[in-house]
Length: 192
Figure 1 (cartoon, rainbow, N blue to C red):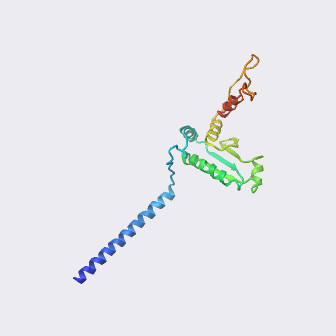
Figure 2: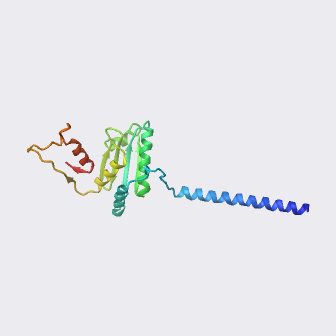
C-alpha cells in the first residue's frame, strides 16, 4: 500500500504541476495578444473616455476619403499634466481612425521645429489633413472635431449679420451685443 499511495501522490503532484504550466501558458498567450492588439474600454458612467458619435462620424468621413490626419502638439515638457490629458484625447481619435498620427514637441527644446511651423505661442496644436492645416490652442474634443470638420470643407460657409436698421451688433460685448452668438457661430466653422 505504501507504493500505491506514493504513486498516487506523484500523479497528483504531476497533474497539479501540469495544470499550473498550462495556466501560465494561457496567461502568457492572452497577455501577448492583448499587447499586440490593445483595446480601451470606457467604464465611466458618462463615457468620459469615449468619443462622441459626431466625432466618430467625422473620422469616418476622413476614412472614406482616405485622408490621413497628422497632429503636432507644441507643449512644454513642464506641462506634463496638460500633455497627458491631450495624449489621452488624441489616443481616442487614434483608436477610432488608424490613419491618425500625433506627436508632441517641446518648442523650447526643439526650437527649429517650432520655427519651421511658425509657432509663436504655446500650447499650440497643429492639425494637418491632406494639404490643409489649422492651428488651435484649446485641446478638447469639441474644438478638435470642429477643426477636423473645417479641414474637410472645400469652401467656407458664411453667416451674415445685418446692420444699419437698429439691429444688435455682433461686435458689441455688452448685454445688448451679439458677440457671444458670433463666437459660437465661429466655433461651428462658419465665417461671420
